Length: 146
Ligand SMILES: [Fe+2]
Image (cartoon, rainbow, N blue to C red; front, side, top):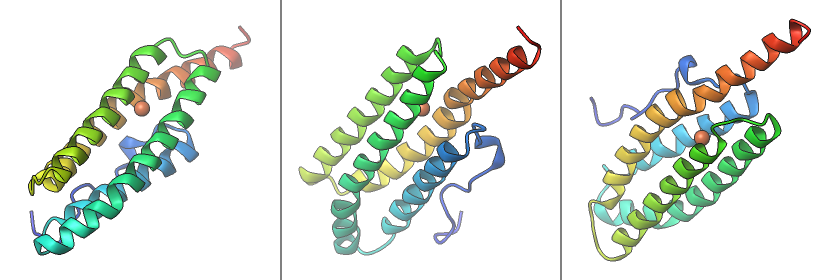
């Protein structure tokens, strides 16, 4: 992979069929790519960038998770408790990463960029996709009249 390539490219298979959630996920992809590119700047630039974005990213992620959880509650999604736990673990991981960085780990931004990438690929494309199928099954049921 060339240095200037994006770490993640949005793919249609990531879509959960809910446009405002897809928009939030696209924003997460963009933030991850920006963070990744910052890792190739000199360490002072990367450090300043990381300090600036990490708390914004966390705020954004929390808003996104509450949007998703409200949607899942509204549709009485059976996997909501375990999905919520995944979200909590993710926030916890980011907080730990920010702490490591503040404690002087110069590897923390690159570790976080990779973690975000893996998370997007697995959580969005697999775990979030499950509520896509659930919503689709609800629609099929209601259009069948039952
Ligand atoms: Fe999720």
